[in-house]
Image (cartoon, helix red, strand yellow):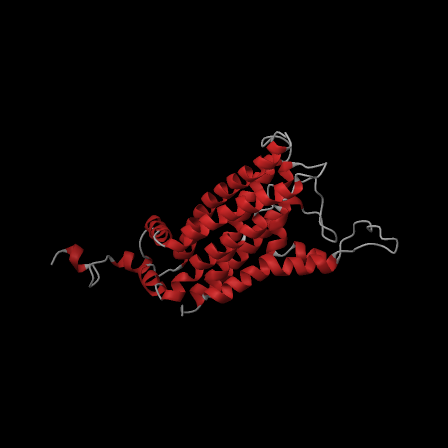
Length: 289
């Protein structure tokens, strides 16, 4: 028996590797293979892109009759419905292994566990980034017919448009990571999906509606003032994400603080980081079930 054999585990794996697991690059490659080998991420991405383009087209066509029609104003309208896609993508990636029981194999191969979640985050972010770019491109295509019918040239490099396109891309990526964090934290697909839809869609709308100051006795809009429900709605993941797809010149929603696209992106990023950290703590502190 030589020295190499003497220091190996019964399965022929060096002790250091058995304790720490494979290198991080191999973990990322494994998670990438898991994601792209499934059909659901591809279908989710395809539906997201198609819905973004179709809804944007319909919105632009409906608005093209207005005297002050600006095609770029309809650019992000498709994402209001298409945002369900990245949420589903993230939830399926985060909770999928717990649903099938495959997490036992993953955590046996990677005993420290945290590299698995970090690798999933990187892989989902990359997949969502490609989806987001395609969805933004589909949205651009969606406004072209309405713009052409009015003889309006679409300028994608002037004004707030480059920032709006960037915000749309980051919007999709951020929501996918939000879904991943909730899936990894709750470990069940349905509860995680319901939580994601509530935080991204339902709760912001309810709070913004309640927080709208409305009009005065004369029917005139009251001067802008921040209300508690409006502020809470802005700081939800969905409320913050919506700010990323609005022009800097649009101003704040009624009753909400003026965070702007950058502020909204930072709030959404804080939510994602917080939920991922909580999921990681739970992953390391308790046995996965």
